[in-house]
Image 1 (cartoon, one colour):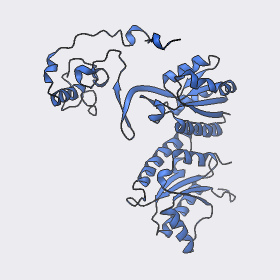
Image 2: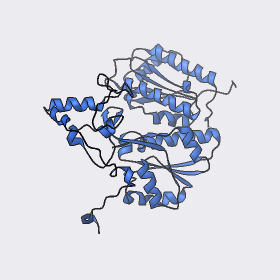
Image 3: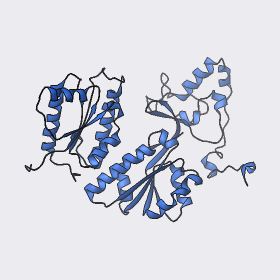
Amino acid sequence: MIVGDRKPIEEIKEMLTPYKKILLVGCGTCISVCMTGGEKEVGILASELRIISDLEKKGWEITEDTIQRQCEREYIEPLKEKFDQADVVMSMACGVGVQYMAEVFPHKIVLPAVNTTFYGTNVAEGEWQERCAGCGDCVLDKTLGICPVARCSKGLFNGPCGGTDKGKCEVNKDLDCAWYLIYNRLKEHGKLDMLDEVMSIRSWKSSLHGGPRKRVREEAQK
Amino acid sequence: MSDEYTPKIVAFCCKYCAYTAADLAGSMRLDYPTNIKIVQVLCTGRIDVLHILKAFEKGADAVYVAGCEPGDCHFLEGNYRAVKRMAYAKELLKEVGIEPERLEFFHIGASEGPAFAEAAKKMTDRALELGPSPLRK
């Protein structure tokens, strides 16, 4: 899922200061599951904003709504009336949602309430960890399921580096060394010989270095 | 403070402990402030930060959550979760400009009528000391 963190309240306050009627929109998918921008978090932020508005005489009128997905037009379009009535819209979705709502309703400004951080997984109650960097050229077959792009602090393809220390990374002692994990994983499956293969220099064109990416499936088009 | 200021206090009380203790405090004819509005919940684990924020938004001067003694939760760990949520709610109150001291958590066993009365007095005293909530309607 896409994981995000809510922006500091001061930043949100500053963004909203010029406006009166604010529509706060949550997203019911990834950002809801990571407890950052779902229906409940929309309720919490709306309540905070109402309190701030009362205390600081901001005169904000907050309207709340949460749709299933802000990355799909069919879920956004029913919000038209609410968009029309608002001076500004604040999205609690990931950056995709913010942008796509602004594309669907270009006459309205859509502000982000969330910093989109990573593609991750919910490893335990209340804890999410990064697992994928969306680089566009997956090598998980060579590492048996541990991504060196997302999980090695240096993104090394032929690790570990000299900074590995008892399974931890020199960048942060709380971080597992991805190449230590990869070594153990290969060993567990009796495939340590795979480490003899040196991974070649890769092209990062498939990542953001080739510009924004696009996928077209003709069989799915009209 | 002005003589007219009587704090409005909301107490979210667990049915299995603090609410029973409140009942007992009544049966024992214990004195405690009458400005406490008790909301019975099945477990303090049910209390979300949203309930706390709403109470303040509607003008409560103080809010407290009273749950079971550690290890005594009817649902095993609802009270532990509530304690953590209250810490989070205090952070949220702080960031919007409300004194976090206006919110508190108490562990009160079902047989502790006097402890219930004590908590009610403590929060009333605190609300008197802090003065009316800036959001008071």
